[in-house]
Amino acid sequence: LSMIYLIIILPDFFTEQGIDPFDLIAVGISFIVAVASFFVWRGKYVDAESQKVNRLNSLIRNREQQSEILIQSIADGVIVTDTTGKISLINTSAAAMTGWPVEEATGIDVRSVLKLIQEDGKPLETNEDIFAQVFALRKNFSRTLGLLGRNGKKLTVSLVISPVTVSGDKKLLGTVAVIRDVGAERQIEQQRADFIST
Image 1 (cartoon, rainbow, N blue to C red):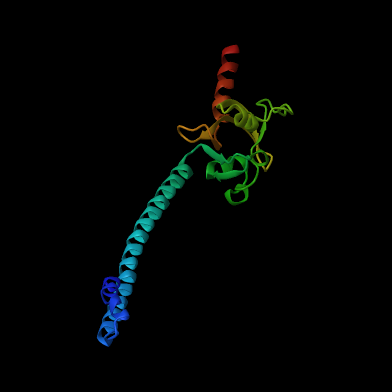
Image 2: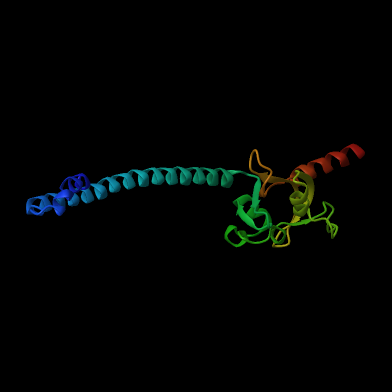
């Protein structure tokens, strides 16, 4: 509005009479009103955008909390790694099986926490890096192995490791390992086999 008014009175600059002080005051007031309106409307727009962003952040936090609660509630051990093999998430069941507290295990290479051996107690082959195979082949790995805990306790576990990729995209984000203690099942199977053989 102030610009329009300025255009209207601009020809007065080139006349002998000059500009009326009233015209200058009117232009100044309209300019101040325009600037004030700009800041008021910009503030309202920014507030509306901020509210949208806050709602979105809250929704994401709620979903992350729900996922965290679900993972921590699973009886099986769950370990999530990034593409370098470092643990980004470990639930309490996996922490109990490995003997590593959640806080200490997070950020450490999974091979240091998940000490795997053969079911009969013999060490794995030196070239048998299971996580490297999953990274390279991007295929699920499933096998019954021995797990040597931090305290030296040996467990017989069923281990399933799956690559994590973006749906519709083959980009690898990491792996998720699910560990189930099958020691009791193996003991029952052994007792049954002994009974049959007897």
